[in-house]
Image (cartoon, rainbow, N blue to C red; front, side):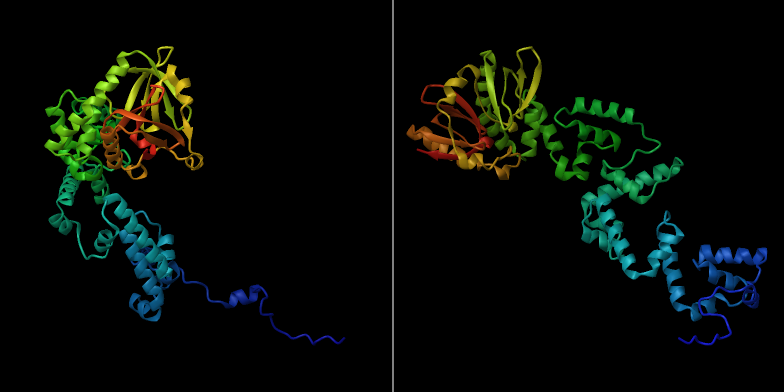
Length: 431
């Protein structure tokens, strides 16, 4: 094997020697004035340091830089715009985003989604505002709800600026909307907000505490709350009317009717229809019997206390402890001392039981209320028997004693009774 002759000269990947390093021109030293020019080019024009140094050293002008390095100039221009529009963005991130247009588009999409979340506007409207097709002022002229929010936001910015605590338009909008996610500011005292919220809850007990706390923090009355949050709190003004008209009704029953958006005639009819149920539970409470509450999980027992709450019962345990039992978690109730006799007449539908159904919190998951009422009316007229299949697979056969718009008392063949709640019924068949 013959070796190749050695060739003089430095290999391609060899490190530069002291001799080759000395052959390169040394970088131009910048005086203080030139350093200041370089700094200005980097901060104002967003020119990257190598090019800013060359311009400051006099190797080329800014105009020559734009012509000789158009791609680099375009990148600097995009980075400059990003830094102007995003005060908290670093220069490194601005240049990284400016390198690739797809990165810019992804960032803009994220900003639009954030804007939509904080303003409550749709993605489409948020995009129109971001692209300059519409302004917040123009939107306020065509949307009464946004007009109310935008006026509050501008007043908020003006008052805080005067007080020496300026806020961004986005923060002002979030405050004007009553945004729960808005972080507490230096001027806000949570204890004071809680105190005012508690006072408002005493004044408007039909409102939930989170609603009155929202009113306290964001300086909203019932009309204002309905404006900024029509989907969640638009019923507040109507609830106040009903509270003043029917002072004897339970505050949660008032809220229920307001949320159902019933007119005056429908409210009067609804109260008339539900009065027998309130009377019935007063009767059960007065009997001082223990009742079994069959839930989706383990059953519970207790004595009923008189309570007109439409969503729960107040129970007293054997040791005197008082608790609340949500009606939506209960399939039926019956006298505890009759449970053994009732069990003997209880059937089971294995197909339904295998579905392992949970509580039907949504109306769409329940058997239609009107269908149940129609069948109960047929049963009462014909004095017929019916089969009630519950969502846990238990089956009762009997005749209805009475019913309200929400429950039915069924008399079994051994004269025992069970109170079945409509939302717990899976199927109802007339026999």
